Structure formats: C-alpha cells, structure tokens
Amino acid sequence: MGNTPSRTVFFTLHQWVGLVIGLFVISASLTGSALVYWQELDHWWNHDRLTVTPAGTPLPLDELVRIARARHPDATGMNILWFPQRPDDSYEFRLYFDKHDYGMDGNAVLNLDPYSGTVLRDGSHRDPSHVMHWILTFHYSLHLGLTGVLWMGLITVAVGVSLITGIWLYRTQLLSVVLCRKRIHWANWRTAAFGLHGIVGVWTLFFVAAIFFSGFLMNRTAFDPNAWATTTYQPAPATGASLDRMLAQSRDVFPGFVVRSMYIPFVTGDTVRVSGDVPGTSPLLGHGASAVAFDPLTGEVVDRIDINNQPMWTKFETVAYAFHIGTFAGEPSRLLYVFVGLAPALLAMTGFVLWWWKR
Image 1 (spheres, helix red, strand yellow):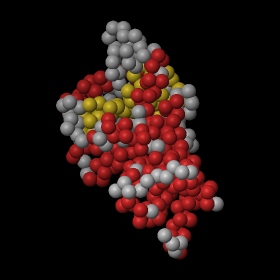
Image 2 (tube, one colour; image 1 turned 45 degrees about the horizontal axis):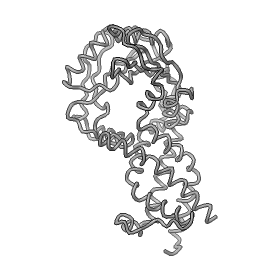
Image 3 (cartoon, one colour; image 1 turned 45 degrees about the vertical axis):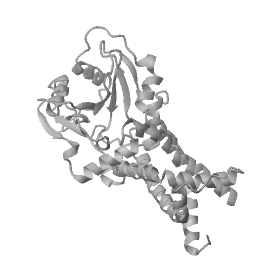
Image 4 (spheres, helix red, strand yellow; image 1 turned 120 degrees about the horizontal axis):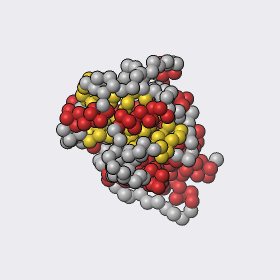
C-alpha cells in the first residue's frame, strides 16, 4: 500500500490522536470493564460490612429515608440503587448535593440496616476506600466534576476520529480479517503488535464504536452552556405520602414491574420516580428505562413512562445506553463486555508500540 498524500494525512491523524488520548482511553477501558458488574463487585468486596442480621420486621422506607436525610441535611435528593435482595441485605442510597452534579464527584454512598436503621457505610465518591464508587466517578468524569465530563466527552469525539481514520487505513484488510484469513505473527513484538492492533480492532469495531458513541451521548450535557450555570434550590418538606405505598403502587400501574431504583427529591419542583422494567420489554430497552412518577406530597401518580411507547429518539438513547453498559442481551452480553471493554486499552497500547517502533 503506497504512501499517497491522503494515506499520509490519515495515518498522521490516526497516530497523533491515538498518542494524545491513549492514557485516557486506557483508563476508560480498564475502569469500564470493571464497572460491568460494579454493584455485584461492590457488594462482594464489602460483604462483611454490608451484610446484616435479620431481626424482625424491616423499618418502613420512610423511616430509612428520614435517617438518611437527617445524616445529610444539605442533600438535594437521593436514589435507592440497591433494594435488599435477601433478608440479610442492606439498602444502598446515593445522595446528591447538587441536582446538576453531572460528574457525580460530589455524591455520597450510604448503606443502612433495614431492620435497625444503623449506618453501615457512609462516604463520598471521592473516597478511594469506596473502590467501585470511586472507579465509577473516575470513569465518568475523572473526579473533575463537569469539567471532567466535558473532557471525557471530547475524548469520545477523538476516539471517533481514530476509528474513522483506522477504518480507512485498514480498509483493504477488513474482509480478510472478517473471513479469518489474517493471522497474528508472534515472531517478535513488532509483528505481534501490528497483528493485534488490526485484528482486534476489526473484530471489536462495532462494540468499541457503540461504547464511545453512547459515551458521547451520556456526556453531551457538558456541551450545553446552561449546564454550567449556578443553580439555587428550595428545600422541600419531608415526603408527605408513604414511599412504601408508592413503591407498591408502581407495580399496580405496571403489573410485574421490576423495580431498579427509586429517586426521592429533597427540593421543591421534583417528583418521586420509581424506575424499572415493564414485563416483556427487550433487554435493549430495559435496565430501568420505564418509570412511574409520583407527587411527593400527595402520593398521586403524575406520570407513567413505558419505554416501549416512547418516541424513537428516546428509544435510541436507551438502546445506546444498553450498548454502553453491556445489558443489550442480558447476562451473556454483560459477560462479553468484561472482555470487549478491554479492547480499547489493547488498541491504545499496541498503537503506542507501533509508534515507538516507527518513530
């Protein structure tokens, strides 16, 4: 393949974009792979700390929320991210101190014993001792708040440039790789790096493109000037209606509703939102994309959102999110993503090796 002017331009662009963003791609790749099962890993890692001894009847959800709010009176809201799956499980809450903290850096994690209300864990996402929560925030914003969200959004754009130039440069070899006619030559590190870079790049192209494009969609809020404006909040009184009743009513609205999370506002103007999956929903549109919203004072249903009946763009964003976190085909695709998530790191490292060899 000759060094035509267009090839030289594409090669130079591919090379230098890769060098500039390489470390960020590696960090996003490694943390992303770890985050596929982040909640399961967090509970495994902290099993002794988060496991409780069943003792009678669990406290009402309203009482647990009251304990959480009293512990963090400056919070603007909270999300129940983990409902007890077994009698010895604890509740896990994520507390927000700014509704528009898109980088999640200011969030806190709080686990409560459902029987006594005892605090089992309470700390910031900035605290490295809360390993998986720290990794989650680092993956999304590098612990730099909205600035980090913007930077990671720009990284996804740069990855798009790298993918497009890489496809163009390797275009004559694509079919050979797909038909398994290309082999990795392990004779030395140079040929091995070249083979890995091309073959892994082709075989994971769709997934890597989907991961980074969906990452851009998730981070695009940082490109909106309004996201950078300072916002003041008016504290809301304690929720007047029973949260347990709202939770039960969400299953009346959507029979068989699988609850994933429950958002509870502490400022005026927000609704309680129970998110989950409607039975029969494809995994592509699942993982909490449907919801029932309630008036926090009266407990009345104010909105019903079945993702299956939403506009095409909303469905597209939901599918993109499923391809970002690996839930698009249920458990098999999550397991696949543990390994696919490592592909960008491998591409960045082999790309660096090839640059070092040619420099």
